[in-house]
Length: 204
Image (cartoon, rainbow, N blue to C red; front, side, top):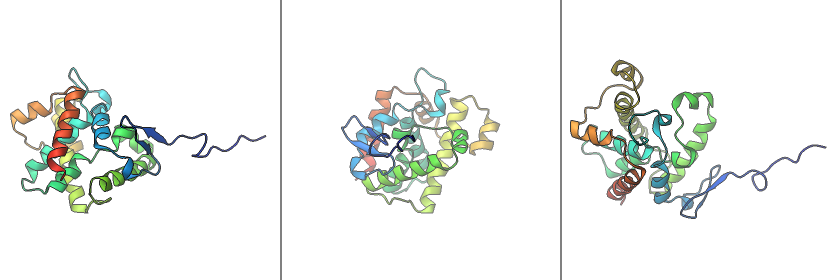
């Protein structure tokens, strides 16, 4: 006798219930099931670098996205608010699927990326962005992301400057005061609050 094959409708659960009450399907995410409060709450509790960072608190993905958006504004002072919004949301799928370090993503091949891409497309639609960003915007956000990663690697994750330059590129050159603030790990409550405040400033 063979075991009954599991289907999405019975034995396999492919959705997550959010604190807002939304039920988000990971395999076929609907923009209607996405709430910014859920994103902010989740990202503020997801650790960058698998938690291998200095400080009394984790360095959260929410704080990272704020750092990326700050680096983007430094590099592109007149950048459109929609691009700033896209930068703020660039890691938003991680409120559901977590922040998986790049070496482990490589082990999983394309499966993680496929789920991540579907979620990001739904998130973009929910907040008025195109499902797939133009290449120039994607590259600008990736450059800011690498700059943020350089700072996090050298200030929080134990990388030498030379190793970080090889892996992530150059120091983006933030002021000392901005660097101190954004590279001091915040409490989850502060990260969530500041993420929502920045979202409110760029989402119109």
